[in-house]
Length: 67
Image (cartoon, rainbow, N blue to C red; front, side, top):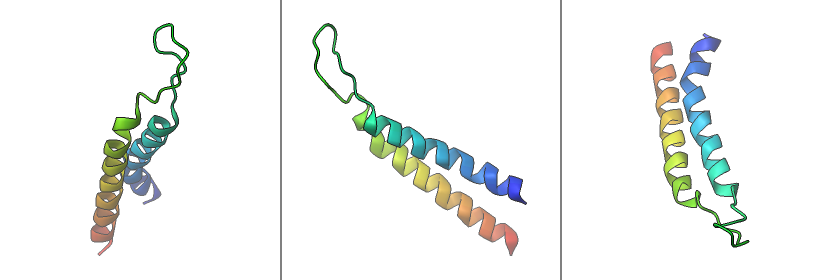
């Protein structure tokens, strides 16, 4: 039973970690110019929403399976 829960929430956790990494990642150089940029910031919302949707569907499937 614990293994099933882990398999349901592992993809969700992966996407949430990817969202956090995308939010905090900073590129200190663009070419040869020393400018701090955040090139992965546009993907944060996509990764976070995907993680939440996968987590909610995994929770829903686990609750439905227990009944």
